[in-house]
Length: 170
Image (cartoon, rainbow, N blue to C red; front, side, top):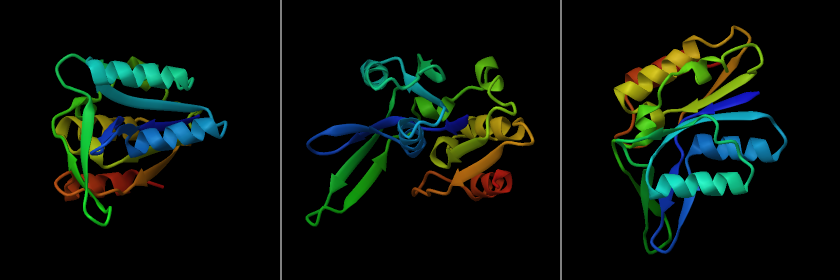
């Protein structure tokens, strides 16, 4: 199995919105290529979160490891396009994926059956998210490889996060 950890969110453009988040995109495409995938994330128990679950089920994408958050809303990125169509991003803070929890279901995935863990920087922007993801990585089986997607968004990373993540990577 390949395990992807991190954000699932809505990219909100001026005229439409779509489900996004690099870890989700990787997991979704790997699943469509026939790879067994586990996707760990967290969404709000809100209308956006309900819509994400509904859409993922329509695509037969497992929602087993997507946690529901009672206090924090589903993540959003507000996308503005300039006259040339070049995007700028406003990544909303303090959302559900900032609070992914380590739990027994996640712990059960950290064995020799998980060949690779894919993770990025954004879901580690909060101290809570950073500690959770680093805990997952440190408790993986010794045979499990780690792929760190160094996708740095302004205001959403620290040197500590990048260094720790690079140190966990293969």
